[in-house]
Picture 1 (cartoon, rainbow, N blue to C red):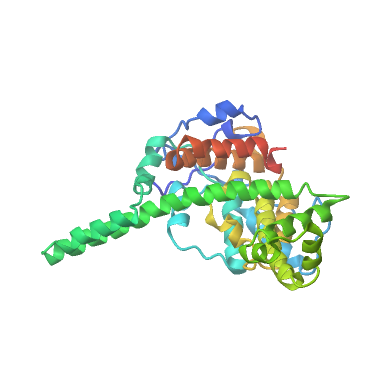
Picture 2 (spheres, rainbow, N blue to C red):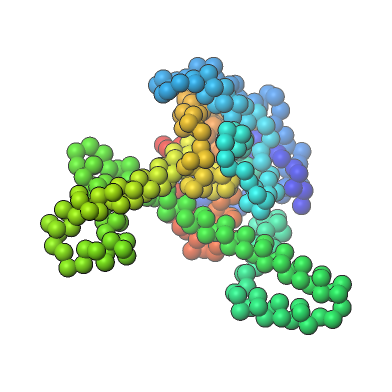
Length: 355
């Protein structure tokens, strides 16, 4: 399998002429990676880079920087799609997630898009080491003891090294599925949280934070036997500072989920193919201009692109490609239950790019 092949425009199967949910679940790619090696994005396929925003004015200072960064990301549409090995390498190798450079590289990857016309056989060959279930600690202990008993130094070194490497890869596959399931719940939380608008929203949020705070073991011990009125007085008195610090911490976590949701609305399923888009990376590691850059990309991005002699929705096409890959990886690594969690998310909480 040629992981270095990064094909250009694909068929219109992933274009705005959308298939049904059942068709998307069972769709299988028609080209192998090797067969697609001759397809490349040429300059003629490169979408024009917008020079003016179509939306509202940007917030805050640094507008020139925001425009420059957004345009640099949009230029990703002129590059070849990312390959399957590009996807897996991002999960298997340490990824820098702090600062402007990490943001710009991830935005560029999202705008480049992913080549999706790859069959299960090719994917299985790539992810085979990730499919192994990692050992429990008793199993690891027993394996280590057996390795200790190998008298030949060379063989002992080889066997221990192989087991260490295999265990790490197996754990990587398990961690990928774990993080995907977390992302799904984080996205659903953010979508539901965003419905708290208008009259009564602040009260609902306060009740949410207080309910969480009152579930803490230390807090529970202090309010046991108290009436609701007494608990309310304690929240405004002796527990006030502790509650305030706790709420701020929870607010930061919710901000991270909301930023992930904003990226999901813009890039769709691509957020599952790049570990940069994990919610925990959307907090203090982000620059002050990051959300403005996301908004600017949405405003300046070409609305359509030429593909197979048709005009298709640019972002929706890339979302469909990413969705096809995500469906495949969720199913192969996590099984049908995990796969259907993604199907349910996209049906119940579709990203804005689908509207």
